[in-house]
Length: 526
Image 1 (cartoon, rainbow, N blue to C red):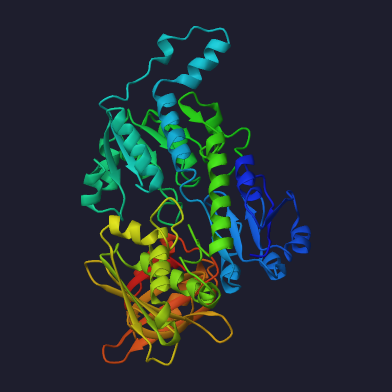
Image 2 (image 1 turned 90 degrees about the vertical axis):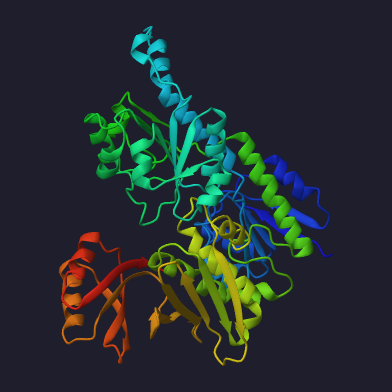
């Protein structure tokens, strides 16, 4: 094979670099701290780019990447990579989703123990010359109930380790089946039940609209007065202002946080002044072992791709060979967005059916996996890639069906979700200009933009309804970018997709639901 060039633009463990340097026909260079313009000047000659969180792989960088075939992210988050552009250009993006799981889980447990035994407070008092033994009496973990919110990779490790401490573990996860929870030795419960029963609550959920301020005034009021909250997941899941008030009111006994709504935490923040709170500066993934592990993993993954075309932990492309990645890439974003959209309209899923039409029929398997990944990513604490999505679905008893329809003239993707209560459908395609289009939703034909914020409204097809909806949105400062309406002339019903420029508050949605002739209103992000 000819020599391939790999650029490492962020600090990588020495062990990871050694994997690259010891591989024949691989020429590796390390150049960190590059600006966007500097990276653009260099990237054209490289076949692979390895990054951490520091490098921003923008559309400008990707357009300058004439030879780039793969981007390897040492870690889980890929929000610093322009995934749509990478997919469109056929650049494979891979990460290491499990590399930090153990480290983050252990940190959550360390926070729980520190909080239970008042270790930071006792340590500070002792260093200040005070033997504060009585003041720092703690509580045991043995025989206590731990409530785990989110049983993804990290949550499962926490549950397993807690069982070793002889804690009773209960959990809340809308996508996990009761049977799988039982195999983990965990009792699956509703969130309100978890809050009512748990002595310790640890959060391992993603930050999505449904989990924003999940722990706020109402949640704290449902917890035991002796309960303690631990969050090493995402800032914004805990309403910090409400937490301070709950602690002041004695509604809960304490909290330990590693993540915050605004980072770094500003001086003068009220949480910094409290003795009943343990705080750490986003240390969940910060161990030497984790940093070395993700460095070695991504080096091996990049080498395997460059030498054999193997894709492990692909974020934007499932396991593919040859030129299929370049041909499929532009369609993957359509599939993922359809999955994400239906995840917000359906109440979970029992079955997901993906049909690929026309020239896409032979690519139905990777498109189905991408759709499934988009559906699941809204419910898990870490990104779901197409390779892991089928396994995650199996654990949650979600069945995936793939259907090929090569005889149809248009290359479109149709997704049907059965949530046990009903059927939800969405159909999408790429326009000739490369745009993302939603051409069908819940049985209604339309031609809407498949991106951004949107309000989905079901209503009677009556005069004045659209005007009334627009008036409510305008009154609350919600700008409408586009409107598409699908009609069913037989039933006199309509479904409208209002593309808007920003999030829509729940109070606005409730006002819309109160309008005459309105049957349903949902806010979605596509």
